[in-house]
Structure formats: C-alpha cells, structure tokens
Length: 376
Ligand code: GDP
Ligand code: MN
Image 1 (cartoon, protein in one colour):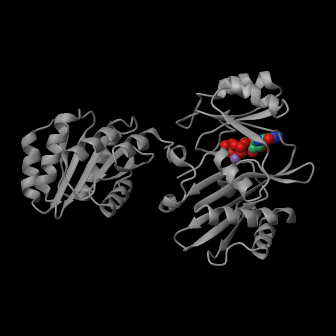
Image 2: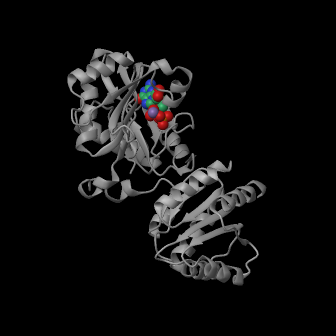
Image 3: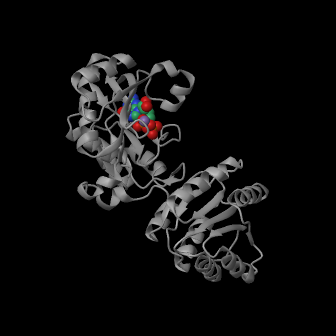
C-alpha cells in the first residue's frame, strides 16, 4: 500500500524529520486561503501515487494566493501517468542549496534492507543510476541491527552526503521500522541556504501484511492508484495491473507467475497478473474477464488452467457461462490441462465461440496469445 506524499511527510514529521509547512485541499478556492496562511508564495503539488510529478507539470511555484488558486485549478483534475489528481498540497517554498536522494528498500532476495543514497538528488534516481552508477551508493542494512548512527555515517559517507544528514538517516530508518514500511524514499532531501536538512518529497510503501496494526490511514491509503486494480479489488479479485498487452487468467499463483514468464518468453508482455484460485465459479471467470477486457491495452487474453481438485470440465463450464454474461471483444486463447482435460476441451469446443480458440500446451497457447496480441 503506497501512501500519498502528504501522508508520508506526516510520518516523517512524527519521527522528527524536518518538512516544510504544508496543507492539503481538493478545492482551488481553499488553496488561496491556505497560501495566504503559509505566507503567500507556495509550491503547489499534485497528490498522486506516482513519481515524476515535477516533469509532468504537477509541481509548480505560485507567487501569491491568487496565483496559488489558479495553479491549483490547473493541477486539480490533471492526469499524471494515468492518475487523476484529486488533491493538491500547498507547501512553503524552500531555498534549496543542494538536493540529495535517500531511501531504504526491502531487498527480498537478499533477506535484508538496502540503503540507497546519492548526492545527486532531485532527478529520478533510475536516471542517475543508469547514467552515473558511481553516484549512487548501495549499502546493505541488516534488519536486526538497523541503522545506528554509525551505520548512517557509513551510508552518508558512501554517497558523499554531508554529515548533517546522518541524523535524518537514523530517523528515516525509525519511520520504516515503526510504521511497518517496506520502502521509504526522500527525493529530494535538501540542504537549505540556512543549512537545515529538509525532506521535500516522500514516498512510503507500507507492508500490506501489517495492515491490521496500521489503521491510521484507513480508506484513503487503501485507495488504488490504478482504476483497473480498484475495480478488481472491489470484486475481490487477486489482480495486479502490468504494462503489456496479453491479458492473463490462471488458477494458482505459481501457475500464473510462470504464465507471465512464458508469455514474456514469447516476446509479448503480460497485461496483468490474475489468479482466480482453485474454484471454477462462472462469476469469478466473468469478473476476471470483464476487468481484463476493460483494459484498453489488452489485445488478447490467455486463460491458462491446470485442472486439479477442480477438474477442467468444471472450469470449462465456468468459462462457457461467463461468455454468456461478458461480451468478448478480444480473442481468447484457452489452455486446459490436467484432471478431465478432454471433457473440458469438448465442453468449450461445443460453445463454438468465434473468438475462443484452444491450444493444448502452455507454450503453444502462450505463443498463440502473443501472436494475436501482435496482430491485434
Ligand atoms: P516529483 O517530481 O514527483 O518527485 O516531485 P517533487 O516533490 O520531488 O518535486 C520535484 C522538484 O520540484 C524537486 O526536485 C525540487 O527541485 C522542486 N521543488 C519541490 N518543492 C520545492 C520547494 O519548496 N522549493 C523549491 N525551490 N523547489 C521545490
Ligand atoms: Mn521527488
């Protein structure tokens, strides 16, 4: 679960990290009032759960309250990488002398955390890492030891950050630990002309497994940045939006994961992850299909089912019933294998849907779905 910038900065402030004074609103008239309260000149910032807002025109300086209202009106409702701006944050502008990048991220593969830091903050860190990898320091953090002052000093030194950032690095670790986060990122962390170290932007991802004890953000934080994911969540589907064009439905998380790999291996890109679990309900199949088909990027759909306790004929029945309620607009490639595969295939053949075709192997079906996506 990602937090909005204004929520992240609240956590930072709670743990003693300095942040500029700021307030949030969904109204441009109120933006004017807030700007007046903050001293007139403000930075108006789109609140969306995606980075690169600055480049997209979602972060703008306003010289006075009237300009703040105008700017807020421009930014509210704006689309930034598929996220509609519902709120803006107005922040006291800061005299920036230097911009740094600092983050802690869970490194699942290594079973540790990783501190990533750079004296070249402000721009997207991926860009810095690609063009000047030596400017980005990566320091492993043992979760049991955490970030002590000594560890923070090691991170600061590795990245070439001034000693004044050491205290912030320790506090940022406290944020991660106490708030059950798997990612905390500050970009930019700035040094002001007055020598203060301030967090000017913040990204925090909370660990969903700890949601039961992190009730603070309630419904707003649980809001999905992505509309398809929101629709899927409302239907109780285990769906994750990806960037490709082949829609994927499978039964069992492991099978779906390998389906994504096989589709990618065919040179296509999966449009989503969707695990419909062990059942064969027509409702779940219909819900899954309708979410996937409402994704404009999808060019073909690959249903990959291995019949186990739930046999293929039951799954085929579910697909056939789903085809009665969902209008299929893209070609559907189905691979049924395992328990009662022959009976399942016969049921689906009997439906004679012009957009449905079956391929008996996973590789073959993935290849077909990839071809159809390429042609579509
Ligand atoms: P992002 O583009 O989504 O990462 O949004 P940021 O909050 O990081 O803002 C983008 C850039 O705007 C920052 O890197 C800063 O250079 C600049 N910026 C943001 N807030 C302020 C501010 O208060 N004063 C000044 N001078 N620049 C700011
Ligand atoms: Mn930023």
